[in-house]
Image (cartoon, rainbow, N blue to C red; front, side, top):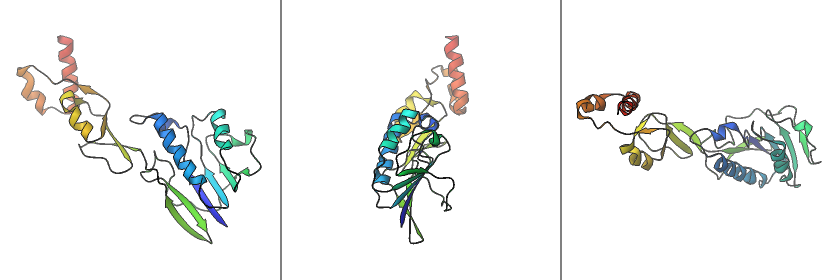
Length: 207
């Protein structure tokens, strides 16, 4: 018997809405991963934590309606009380796992390379999803993110540097104008980024 495992996809999760992610875009990516998982050649499909903490009953019903009749589905979820839903005959709840999961995740927000686990004849195979991840990574230096990462910085960035930062695919939470007063320019250039932002705000208030 061939079994396929989907772990922690978490459709409709609060983590998907955190900076710098776009919630709707993340859901499209996750649904693409789910569609690929459902297309796998397997007899049983195990899905652990398919839903996130923002999943509403209509979301659960929609996803359950997508499960094909080609195999048996076993579900276990920490975020949604699936026992309260009317499940199709080929879908059942899983009390516990009979296999220890390897260190992997099918969630693109958690992993640069979302994966599935395939079990056949006692052998385990980790299969990479074709959809790449969008894992948020905070950057402290200006450098390109690696594959499957969404880079961001929490440090305020001068408006003059926004184009440079954008070319490096780094999302910026806050920007500020550079100081124009020559009397403080040298001090300003040597100051840390957070102090620069505070100094600019103070000067703006002073006119």
